[in-house]
Image (cartoon, rainbow, N blue to C red; front, side, top):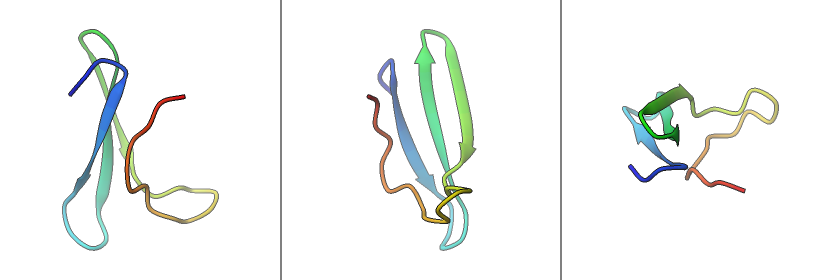
Amino acid sequence: MPLNGGVVVHFDDETSVVVAQPAKGTCTAFDAKCTHQVWLCSEATTT
């Protein structure tokens, strides 16, 4: 995955995670479901 980018990984209809690389050699992952709006991330973007 590109630096400062990320991908959404869909495991099944209910389980998806966002995996991102915010800095070289560092990866993070978190639940793709927004805890505030309860919607599922469809893509990872940076601003």
